[in-house]
Length: 541
Image 1: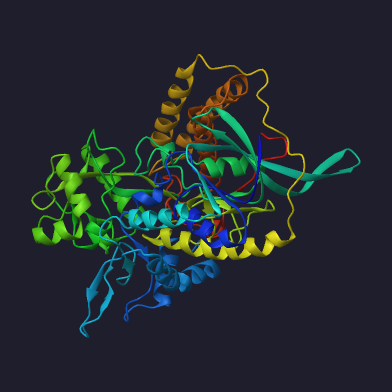
Image 2 (image 1 turned 30 degrees about the horizontal axis):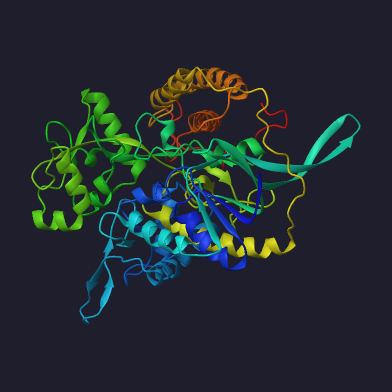
């Protein structure tokens, strides 16, 4: 079954939805999402969107904060573009109907209520209570569902991109040149059929890959699908060693993916150990408002010294009514697990949170495969460098949805549908009777990555992880071609691919910078002030 669409968007977070709304007046749009449309990292984003609105703030300060957080590995041109476009994108969301928190000014009019988070020198976090992502996602989904030119396909997962290349032979050497993306194979999960989508422009907005780790703040859908597919298609992948571990996820056996927003520390929350001792002053002068990599390593160090399971985040010294009003969702959820954050510290641990690396793109979100764009967390645009500044992620998604849509609309004028795309072939494959292989390897990958490629790394740990992931990759490859594909098998294949990329990039960086900390190379080195770029060789190995 071949389906033609001008724009094929894979992923339903803020990046994909906003891009869809911007191009829908100029062609047919299909959005593919593997679960319900609201299942995305956007929905779980609590803190807010970083943007300059306060008179004490400036674009220069926001740029400087972003560069400092990213250990100066950020692309300055990209940082300036994103920061300067921020206020317009916020106003655009307000026009769409997004309700950000506001306060009454001295003049009696309303202005945005700005919060402050770690790494920011000024208050610039535009928020909707403590569930900013959900508010934005809800509004955009409503607009998408009401747009006659947008088709939304839930319970559909992309299997692989469809690419074509020109081949040139010179003597005995065959090279490929000018690869282009023509669409994707998509599994209709409920009907168990693979559809061929023929698209003029394909956009990957699939989010990150937190599920590669045993402990993560991410929802179950965060399996790195877009990054893995782009890698298999031959796109360049960059900076995968920089995995941000959020310092404060709730530590409770029944609390799955429950992040405690950085805004809690921004409003005065402090970190203490099991003895009630405040410890961050030993690690950074900014204490709890230091960047996430610093706070995560500090907590990791404290736990290794003490042998405790967690540290504690305490905001009980603040007025109880203020805490309940500022963090209503966090307060209610903590109560469900037996903690009253207005009266007691809550146990927290670091967890895999955000990927600063991904598919390498130019300043317009284009990859080195023609007709393929990547935006949002799946992309490595150059904004984050070695570490993401808090609340820059939603900002990046909004800005790149805008700039990528402009470029896509320009490009599509010269693009025609590719004729006779190959249909999906599952000849010879049968239904699996070994589902235990999928679940076992899934668990092994996540434990391996947590133990050996986590907050603190070493050459020995990375080598051990690579050997294990390579063995698992071989098992998955054998299994993949023998059995009919399923959602679980596709996700397992993608998680293994992403895990391998993280390890390879980490082994190439012989220093410690930002989110990548190797105990054998504790200092930054000038020679590594560059991106780590990997690409699948033509042999496919």
